[in-house]
Image 1: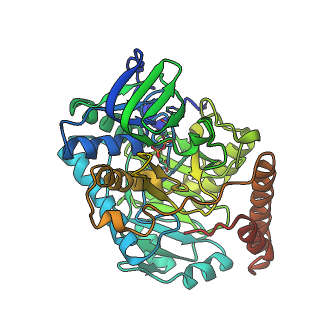
Image 2: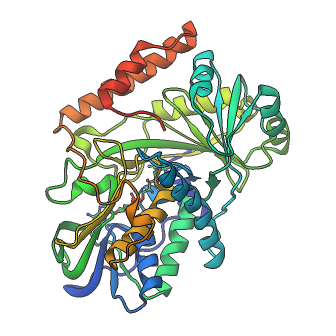
Image 3: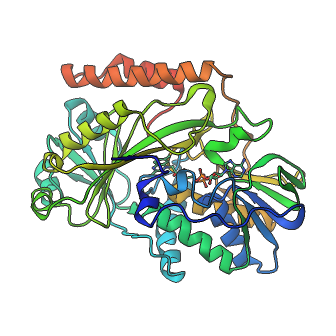
Length: 442
Ligand SMILES: Cc1cc2nc3c(=O)[nH]c(=O)nc-3n(C[C@H](O)[C@H](O)[C@H](O)COP(=O)(O)OP(=O)(O)OC[C@H]3O[C@@H](n4cnc5c(N)ncnc54)[C@H](O)[C@@H]3O)c2cc1C
């Protein structure tokens, strides 16, 4: 089994691409984007399409897509972190469709399938939580029998189907989009880490980039920039993927429509059936590294692989005799108020989009479209969404408090889950964990 590298998604397309040339020295551009993940790439794409004359450079520490964008669970979510008002919801639901439209228009083969998502309850407490959550437009309640017509999940007591979710292959989307923006005339400098950003300037060890606008698109890695250590916590998420399942195993499971699947436990998992017939499952690991450092290559601790594998086998016993092929991890960016933010300051001309808290795969496209409007001075329906140009979240507790706190919250969540499974009653420990962290599952 492979661990890290940094993800199966890259492995499936022949490994990490050879880096593009690094920044050759000092340059001047109109827009300098720090970070070549999907936030940076979508921002460049939207800006360049709106104004082809703009000179845009992306500065990427490794290669485009190397961060969460090339490692995630492939869920294009019709939901945003901390923004569930009607306008925000409509905007992100349309974004899920928009990502598919761009993939088709730009011929990015990213295994995009818009088949919705199914949230499954496997304990009485989970079922009660699921029943309490109001159904949104288009959501459909599924009895165990109705669920079984679509996909057979062991122990399911009920489920909700949500139509506004789509699946994609993260590395294919990131690598494909990087090629598209390059064709549009954006220059991507790889192996080029920024050390600090300032009004009109990005400092790198290879030279300074002077720019009218600077975009910070470093999400979980933002703490590596000077003065930004307490803006976004680099919270880890971990994935495992199986070898391709046999036809007999798929016949037992069903799941022919490729819906995404998650559960509603406190330590929830999110799952996709991949285009090449595997099951990819994401879940928890050690929540944060000591001193909030970000991982080098996405390796995963053995216990987390075993725990995620055990959950996969519980939900899909037919996958038991299929090997786990690959495990990896990455970091998401979480602000202290758990709400995404898209900001462009007309005075400093520094812009940023992020804090997606693990719901960024589609939201990066929305963030990029909003930043493109803001930077070009266009007022649109998107630039007046409630999470745009809001005061920054309060900063995180300093280390090592953050490290210790995250460990305690995760331990409480795990114990709460065990208690709830055993007693069939809602656990006070879960309430305590949510109260301590200030986070609520969306
Ligand atoms: C394991 C995992 C599973 C996830 N699953 C899902 C999911 O299923 N659905 C969903 O919606 N979201 C998911 N997410 C979250 C989602 O992937 C992110 O929200 C999204 O990709 C963020 O994109 P980004 O471009 O803002 O950040 P990133 O993709 O992290 O990009 C930041 C980039 O900045 C670069 N960088 C870092 N430091 C510097 C520097 N100093 N100078 C220059 N460049 C730098 C990095 O190399 C990286 O390429 C998951 C995340 C992880 C880790």
